[in-house]
Length: 378
Length: 123
Image (cartoon, rainbow over all chains, first blue to last red):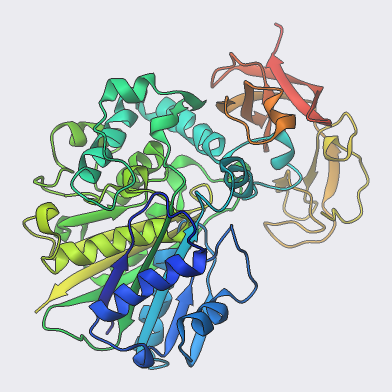
């Protein structure tokens, strides 16, 4: 078995003067303390990457900086799916008794450490170097392509997409650590600057500074335990040009495998934490995962289904769209929030019941997927 | 980026052509050049020149670009085209292209390079 025994999250936004290592350390310190552990008890380290300060041995650099000597440590790179991929690996590492407590950590000063152009350019490199990148696409354009097709096939409208930006902002308003604190409306989203139509500025997550961390342990360290029930991955392509049909994307494959591994059904899920780099990402993933029927996710937002008081609260911290996106730590915030909800520690954001949660991460252009189920055990 | 040995030059190396590969063993097509078939692994798929005819599969207009060179071209339309030969490719296209449009390729200059550019096929 494995448990998420501690979580740590910084505010997202501007952390002027903080390095990636600073943000990682801050989140790691919070997570280790939250688990009720000391640094010396951490024997495994998994970390993401920093586009601001790339390093071929980031986990080792971090371990030295943080002042620990783990028996197992390395970085993991699967784009936006990295956080959950690390969690899946940590789950298997503790289950296999390789280590007892894995610190999963990431942080990046992506907003203040480099220009927005540099961030956009670095991320566009997920495209094919010969057949895509020379055409000058951006990450929003890759997702804009997918959005155009999805909207065409399933009758999703730009107003439908906008509902998700509004929902994430509404959730972020209840979290002091979120990057954005101004409420927005569907009209605001529709009127926001076009970036890569059909995607507009408010359909896109921001670039942020921030850090997130958690501890995955073999045994629980407090009375309430958040247990990893089961998880799975799927990798169907890297480049959008080589993506399969919309009906054959990796989210559907990963969730089918994860359901089998966890022995649960979607109807058992009480809380959802789903990757939301763009509004279209969230729509597609919710429908691929079976949290809404094809073309009906927006109707579920309008009916309050995904709201804090709804049947399936979704990203109650505000998600990447409004809590913020600092790289790998961005999607890790989804897991931090999930753990807080499951342990009843989400304060004014607390939902009624988060006893079984579904988390899903996506890297590249819907290229790499990780689905995971967590269960509250008392 | 190394392409391995190529029989036909294409737009990625500055020639006005779209080239794809066809596997002699299993018949699979692939657009990204490799020295083997990605479906069955057979070596040396045959290189063929595409007609430049196809149908728009998806489109997204880049309004916010990230470099001075590409910014000079905004807005430019990024399209995925399903070619009549049966492979999918990314290219530029007219800004008003819609999904399902029949299109024909020409070539244009973009940020100092030659790129494929699709316009609606004249009937």
